[in-house]
Length: 135
Image 1 (cartoon, rainbow, N blue to C red):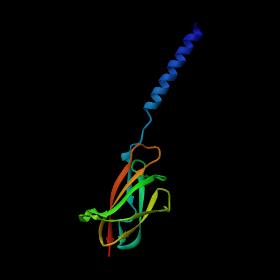
Image 2 (tube, helix red, strand yellow):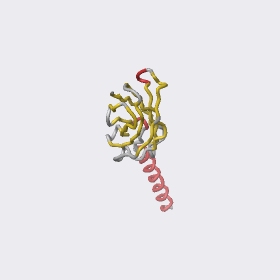
Image 3 (cartoon, rainbow, N blue to C red):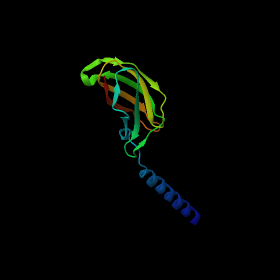
Image 4 (cartoon, rainbow, N blue to C red):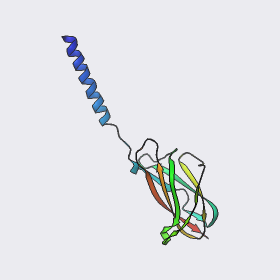
């Protein structure tokens, strides 16, 4: 009879530990991530490189190995959304950086729209960054 009581008490203790252990796990939120431009300006012209960094805002650390699946570059900040250009992914130079090649057909403000999946997170990181193209 005593061994049955000990088994029940041990089982109850394990369940309590399991429940309380999962309650303390802090889950990251997709809103904890953001893209940042490495350089705010580029020279207008063909084949210019844009470098962005994906950061975890809570830790302040760059996030490597994200999957960038949506890119768009247009002149929306200057009210010319129809002035869009192709964006080509390039290899990053360090973990957490993502590079793109694009043609900046004219000087002005360009908006880089990005969508990415972060490994281990649900949801999508979406950001719009403004780049100034100088003459």
